Image 1 (cartoon, rainbow, N blue to C red):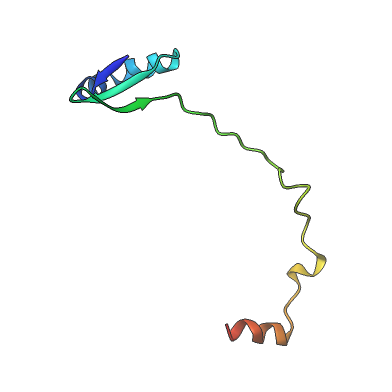
Image 2 (cartoon, rainbow, N blue to C red):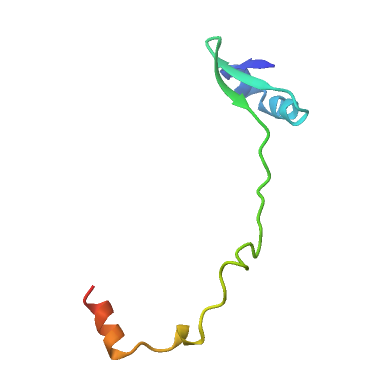
Length: 76
């Protein structure tokens, strides 16, 4: 299916329904294809996907820094 820019602005809901049915929708500008409407891909979120790669922080992670460590940070 093809639609001009004006038709696409006027009938966007109808064009989106066509895309959802699996139709290919091309938007043209002055008869030249300018864009194609495609279905959005659902986001895939994997929770805990780094569980095998990243472990918990060491016990000393939240411990106060020594004077030498603080001095190193202050000179940067």
